[in-house]
Amino acid sequence: AQTVTQSQPEMSVQEAETVTLSCTYDTSESNYYLFWYKQPPSRQMILVIRQEAYKQQNATENRFSVNFQKAAKSFSLKISDSQLGDTAMYFCAFMKPLPAQKLVFGQGTRLTINP
Amino acid sequence: EPEVTQTPSHQVTQMGQEVILRCVPISNHLYFYWYRQILGQKVEFLVSFYNNEISEKSEIFDDQFSVERPDGSNFTLKIRSTKLEDSAMYFCASSVGIAFFGQGTRLTVV
Image 1 (cartoon, rainbow over the protein chains, first blue to last red):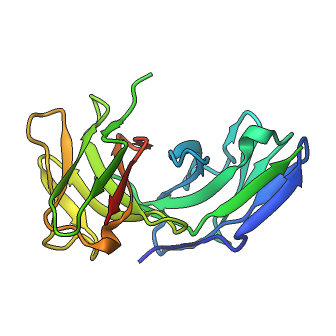
Image 2: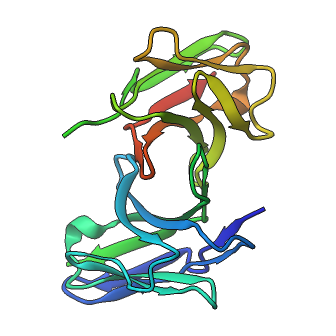
Image 3: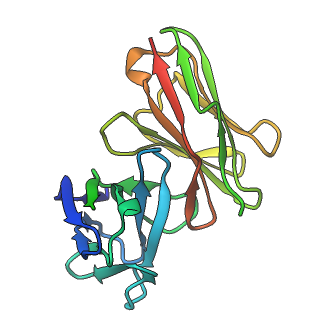
């Protein structure tokens, strides 16, 4: 069974700083997907970024980028120029390819951006 | 932009009562899921649904739970006899490779 581990329960940085959230996972699969989801206080789950394991290039979405190290089974999220609106829980998640594969989530990291 | 919608946003029910949580997935999606998040804990998979049948279910999804897609648009989760420990946020998701989540239903069992 796949497992996802986020070793930082809480992090706090100043606005405009860069912050990196860590995630490691365990799987015997060679092809899979990795995700970061953001959960603000409203508790809605919002997709931040996705990475396909067969792609060597790290995914980037505006201020959000990942460092995907397949051999190390590591998938960290970097947030550049952090903003107050980035304050949220961040969940790392793993998914085997379709059909109908479930997401396996880590425990989450609570990120606070201070003014 | 298409989105997954869930109703109600909050439901309070008495222990032992039946509840039905409703979801309207994104229209061209084929895979549907229910997840649960107990307050302060991680998001847990309950069940996946494809081609009008359950594809996979977790150990949480016991005989008290059922899912249905009654009319080709709605996707429902029924809890037959609620327990206090069923109090949680329930998320519906639909997918064609990327899972999009609804805003959740906060279920409180008293």
